[in-house]
Image 1 (cartoon, helix red, strand yellow):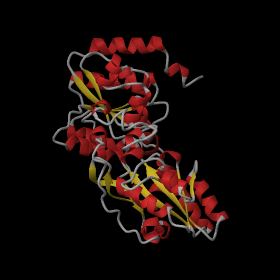
Image 2 (image 1 turned 120 degrees about the vertical axis):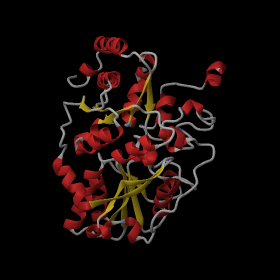
Image 3 (image 1 turned 90 degrees about the vertical axis):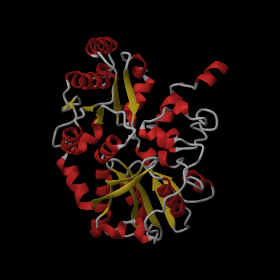
Image 4 (image 1 turned 180 degrees about the horizontal axis):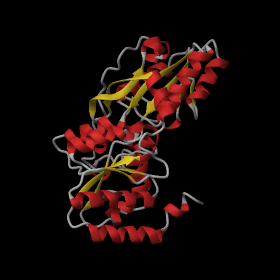
Length: 370
C-alpha cells in the first residue's frame, strides 16, 4: 500500500542502519516525544538494533498517560451523577484515578459512553435535551481542533446541555521542562509529526536556539523513525542544532492555520499539571470566557482540580520523564498489566509500559522464570 508498505521496506531499513553505524562515533541520547513513535520503535525492535551507544529515551508523548490523576477523579465524579451522560474516547475509561475509573462507574450503572468524535457527543446532547452531556476533552494539539469545533458547533446551534471537561496539554513547553530538569539526559528530539501537521514547527525554533538541541520533525513508520534518528545523529556529530523536517509528506512550517484559528478562538493557554511530571507553565488549554458556559468544571461547580496522590507502587512519573524503563518497575508485568493497570502508561495504546508489555519485554527475573 502506497505511503505504508514503502515506509516499512526492510532493505531500506538496513541501509539506514548502515548509515547510522557509519555516522555515529560516540554515545547519544535521543527522545521520541510521541507515544505512537514509541510503539513503533519497541514493536519493530528498532531501539534494540541501533548502533551501540545510540539510546532512545521514551518521552511523555501519550496524552492519556499525562492526563493528571485529579482530572480522572473529576471525570469519575461527573460520570457518577444521574443527570449526566459522560462521553469519552475509549482508552480513557480504564485510566485509574485515586478511587476508581470510568469503566467502574459504567459498571455501577453510570451513563458512560464511548464516542469516536466530540461531534458525536454534541449529537447525543441534542437527542437528550433533558440530560447534561459532558465530553472528556484530552490530548495534545492534535485533538484540540476537533474539540474546538465541537464547542463552536454546540454554541452556534443552540445546544446548551453540552460541556467539556478540558485537560489539553501542549508539547513545546513539555520539551522545555524536560531540558530544564536537573537530571536531563536528552541531547536531541524527534518531534511528533501529527502535532506539527496541525501546529507547524515555529514553536520549536526558540527551543532549538535556547538549548542548542537538535529537533527533527518525524513520522511514525519504521523508516520515518530510522531517518529521523539518522538526521538527529548527523546534527549531533557535527555540532549543529537545527530544526529539520523528516515528515515532509505531511508537515509544513506553518501547519494547518485553519485548525490553529479554531483552537485560538475557543481555548486560551494556561498552566497545566502533567501526570508524573508536575505543573508546567503555559502547557495547557482551557476555554476562553466566551465559551465558559460549555466548561464542565464551571457548570458543575467543580473548580480547579485538586492534586491527588499517585499509587505508591506505580513509577509512572519516572516512565513519563524518561528516567526509567517499564522493566525497572517492581509492579510491571506482575501486579500491573493491561488487564489490571496500576498506572496510565499501561492503559493507553500509546503508553510506554503497554508498548513494552505488548512487545513481550520482560524484566530479567521474569525472563529467567520463563
